Each structure stands twice: as structure tokens, then as C-alpha cells.
Length: 139
Image 1 (cartoon, rainbow, N blue to C red):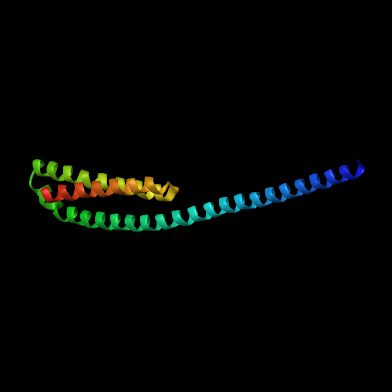
Image 2 (cartoon, rainbow, N blue to C red; image 1 turned 120 degrees about the horizontal axis):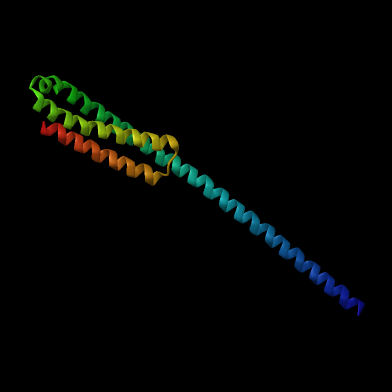
């Protein structure tokens, strides 16, 4: 009887040791996976924000060019009378809205907003710039 108890103790002890080792290995795998996910997400976000900063620079350059065009014809419309001034100011308002959308993109990037939100703001800013450009062409 004593021999069987000893044998049972040994097998139980061995089973507990094996289960413990399996649990340690499983914990290491889970921690490694979580660490890998965090690192890869950080790298992906940095890459996305890099291209988003490039798009922001392109938006700002387009805005600056359009702003120069508006400023170059300002005196012509202001010399033409109140109706011409109203037409010019309405078109210039579209340019101001585009600038606001661009600043919105800048603030989203500075605040570290998610990539998809920044992309939607970039698309909105592009749309507003297109509208401002069309307003300039209609002048």
C-alpha cells in the first residue's frame, strides 16, 4: 500500500510539474504576441502618419497657390463695385473653408487621431479645396 501511495504521489507531482511548465510556456507566448501586436501597430501608425503629413503638405501648397491667385485678382473685383465685391467675397469664403479643413487635418495629426479619421479629414479638405478652386474658376 505504501508503494502505491508513493507511486501516486510521484505521478501527481509529475503531472503538476508538466502542467506548470505548459502554463509558463503559454504565458510567454501570449506576452510575446501582445508585445508584437503593440510594436507592429506603432510602426504601422508611424508609416500612415508619415504619408498623411505628406498629404497635408500637399494640401497646404495647393491652398497657398490658390490663395495667391485670389489675392492677385482682388483689386480688380474691389474696383468693380459692390456686386463684384460680393461675388469675390463669396468665392473667397470657399477658400477660407478649405483653410479651416486643412487646419482640422493638422490638429488631428497633432492630436494623434486614428489613421482612418485623419484620412477622412484629408478627403474632406481635398473636397473643400476643389470647391474653392471651382469658385476661383467661376470668377
